[in-house]
Amino acid sequence: MDLFEQISREKQDFPKIHSVTNQVKGYKMNFYQMFAIGMFIVCFFLGIVFGNLFSTCETSSYFYSNVCLVKEFNFSLMIVIWSFSLLVSIAIFSVGHIIAILNEINKKLGKFHV
Image (tube, rainbow, N blue to C red; front, top):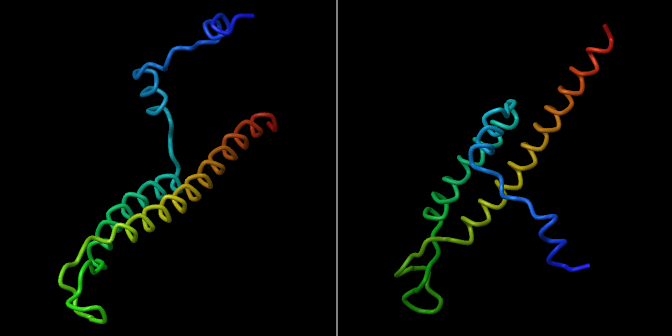
């Protein structure tokens, strides 16, 4: 069997933008999913703010000095806040998705118990 023939048989086109937007418009989110997205947006901006508030000291006047001559933006704190908020948001979003799936199952089972 030729590898190129197999690839041409199994090849699929990318989904069109119109079909993807129709799928996204039809998706309804519950409170947990909206809360997770909102929390991630807020924490995204908080990461930028905290990175600026708790800046790092680039150079000091001498080796054992507490005085900073040049302060820099704290990228490591910003990345930590972003990654932690992403993990928490994904966990909350997944709980909301599980609840949505269980509600759909409950609706379908409710039709049989008439």
